[in-house]
Length: 178
Image 1 (cartoon, one colour):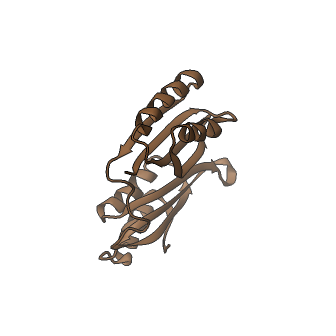
Image 2: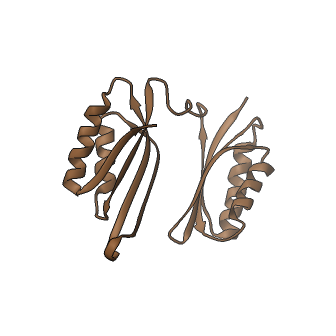
Image 3: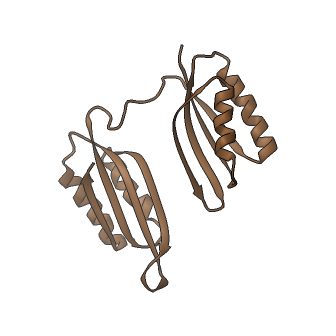
C-alpha cells in the first residue's frame, strides 16, 4: 500500500542541506514526489512530499530526522497523509486565479488580502511575498498568490472585495485567470 508523508525542515542555510534531506528520503526507500524550498532570513526552509510502499518508511523517516536534527541543528516535522495527496490544482469545482498586490510595506497586507479570499471560500495554493527597497528607499511590498476560486463565485465580486481592501491599505491589486 502506498503511504504518503510530508517532511518540513528549517535550519541555518548552508550547502548540503538539500542533499542530506533527499538522501534521507532515499535511504528510507521513499520517493520524493514534490517539494518547495527557499531561504527566509538566514534560514533555509523546505517542504517535501514523499511516498513509499515500505511499511517501515514512516518510522525510518522519523529516526533519520532525529539524527539530522541532532547532527545538523535542523528542526524537522514529519506528518503522514492518511488519505494521500489532494487532487491536482485546480481542485474540481474551482478555477485557478492569480492575485497580485503591491505597495508601500505596512502591517496587515497578507492578513487583509487572505481574509478576503477566505471570506469568499477561495483556497490559496501558493503564496509568496517580499519587502524590498522601493523608490526613495521606502520599503515596497509585493504579494503573489495562486488560488482556487469556486466556480460558483463571480470573479467580479471577488475583484471588488479585493479592491476595497486594497483601497484601505493603499495598494495596487489585480485578480487574473490562471
